[in-house]
Image (cartoon, rainbow, N blue to C red; front, side, top):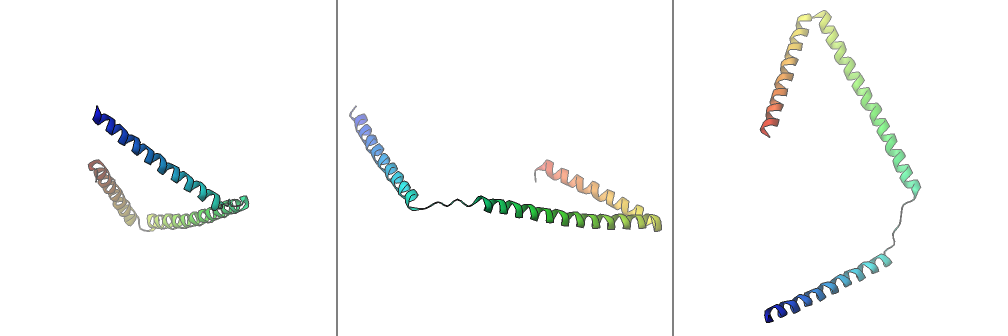
Length: 116
């Protein structure tokens, strides 16, 4: 029983040290809050930030759509030209693209199944 009492006293001493440390930390944080001013930005700042972000996203969307449209027109035009002017090349190209897509899909699926 004596051992338990000694352990209990030792444990009480640790609790006192812990509570003292917590008290010091709380006092330090309170003094920090009192001495360091906190400034909240104006609502106008956030509204301007949102407006600029929307404008930037709109410009990027228009640019991306323009690039997509030009690329699509070039691809469709070249494919139609090949179809009507050189049909053999068109069909060979279609076969190569089909084989490439099947091979890529198979390799991707095998990697996904193997977990690599």
